[in-house]
Picture (cartoon, one colour):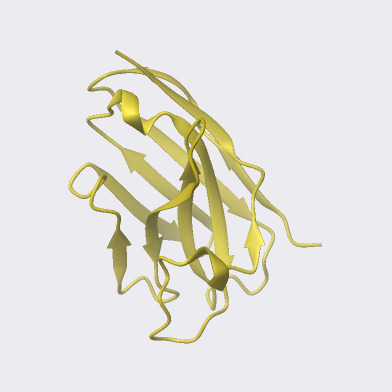
Length: 126
């Protein structure tokens, strides 16, 4: 059974930083595109960042561009989301996701993802 397990969430102050991790039981891991989504209270799930299977392409939501960085360590089968300059509007449950979609697929669409984690809560205080 495939598992994606997020960690690293918690409470941060405005302007602070957090680093999320997502450990995947996928094998092999490298063929999967990976992403982070989030769901804020009372809102729909939204795309945050994605990383292509070879790590050559990254995609970010406009709201996090320049503040968040997605990365992957294929040897550890783990992806990361470094979040800097946090804002109260970043408060949400953050989910990692894995996609076997072919190159050229729109990785910002949740429908292309095959596996999802349970999520980790991030709360940013003002």
